[in-house]
Length: 140
Image 1 (tube, rainbow, N blue to C red):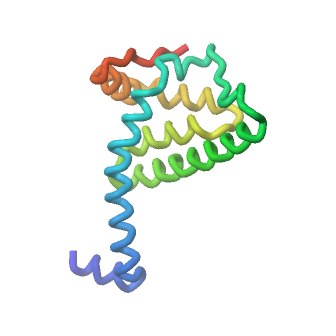
Image 2 (image 1 turned 60 degrees about the horizontal axis):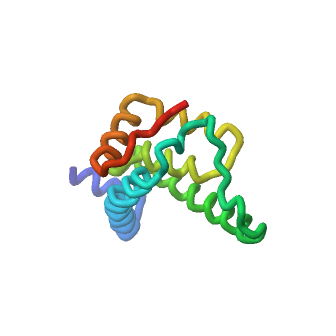
């Protein structure tokens, strides 16, 4: 183990290693809090592709554009954090699912469905929703 630490110190300054460790711990704890809150508060038909979704549809065009830009930036942050959590502690797949849900791109709904219809993912999310007396997600 000491050899590994010496090798790491040669390539990466110890301050960066400590910073990355702190960021990893904070993101892990944040993902344990934020991701369940988001998944619990989504409507049960959120992943049903038969239902169209329009974000800020009836708002002023400037507010809609500003909101869409902010939503896409936040989604990108969640997507990147989720990818990193595939290798570090955290809920990587669920975090990536939230990120994908926030970003606007062609084929997004189908990608969401491919992720959420995995039995382990859907079972985990619906168990969480059941714990908080929310109906399970319905898929198309």
